[in-house]
Image (cartoon, rainbow over all chains, first blue to last red; front, side, top):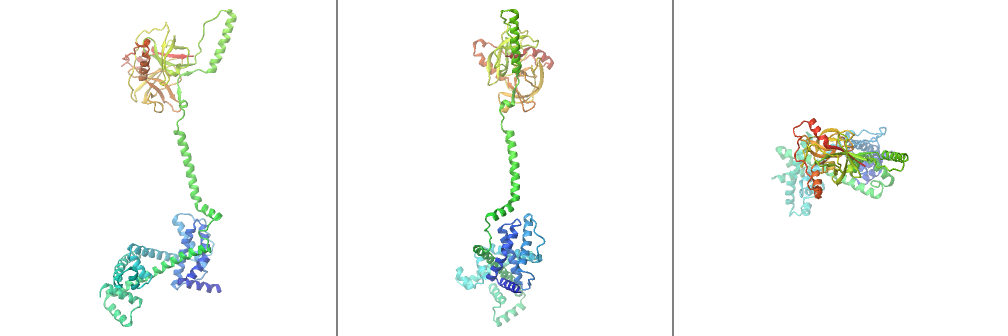
Length: 189
Length: 373
């Protein structure tokens, strides 16, 4: 009972990107995943990738609010990692050396599919922003991601006033939105 | 209102930063102007996506930091695989690669050694076989002992009278052919090189003494001279000796004494150079056996184009002949000696146009078996 409450608290912390919660979940689960990957033709780097993907899946899940964890976090993370690693092995055409089918697993296929879709979207966004070049990249990141005010930005980027910065930001935004919506339409149709 | 102001308003509206009056005004504008409505919907979607992207990026970065700090603390043992675990890990990871690499290395090593073995030059004496007849040493030893015994017997029987009927025990044999009417004869140097006494036999089996007048080991050409009162030629030489190189595929024939009988062989010129690109000789394809050494090679006009000298032991049918122009070279050197100044080699073949049978009939009297002890 106590453990369950504990885990709920952890998930809540995770949803808010609370560093302590993230650290705890990381610490408690990473070695298990690393063992899994290394015992199945992988390296420590592979393990890190797979584990962090699983953490993101869990994070998104916790954030969605509708998530009810009906098993331990450990089991969930293990299931996701196992699935992800098997997929990776198949893509690389390496053979999994007999992943044990009898281990207790929860179904995670839907989550992974969703996660992969999201990943492609975000990768696309990342690429689109990188392709804008400077100063657009830094300008938009400062405003939309770091939520800085136009005044701060004008000072930081050396614009004479906030209006100039706004002007520049507008031009950059139009470019990004153009790229974004082209991809968005292509992706959704 | 310009675009920048509109966008600014839209952003403030979405974020809920407008005061109630302004908000009311904007909502009215949105209802009346579908373009602005469209922009609001679109921008809401975009901002949502941007926000989630930002959080995703931040979370990812956070994970990265967590990973590094936990590794530093030693709470998780990532990148700290050492000792046995590391070896096991590396082995597990690379065993397939290792196996494949080992296979490839093995096959390559085999291929290379085969290649080297087949391409490396073997010592020439293994591959080239002189075609002189080397008589079995032990056999001749036995014969010699037998004659010694016979001599002793003779001495016992006939008393102390000395006998001068010294018998020559021949150790090597080959073929030779005349190049002038006075008994100069060409053969291979390896046929006569170790001989003190040389005897030549014509087709009728008549025996003549001969001696070496010129020995050119480098070209494997020897000139010997018949020195016998009984030697006489009825007709001048029917064949001539060619001064230039012959062409590939030219039909040739040879006469020689691989056995105690003259043997005819027929073939063609296969290559302009000899063993391993030797330019002194040429390659011919003709049946050849020990005893053919020194035999003449004729073309269809009845010209001597070479001296049969050796065959390759590892390749069937590769026989080599010294090109006839080296006969002239040897002769030129010989002519420096005043005794041989006036040697004349027939300039024109009288065999042109005759068929093989007639040609051989005329030539065979001038081809001799050469034996040396």
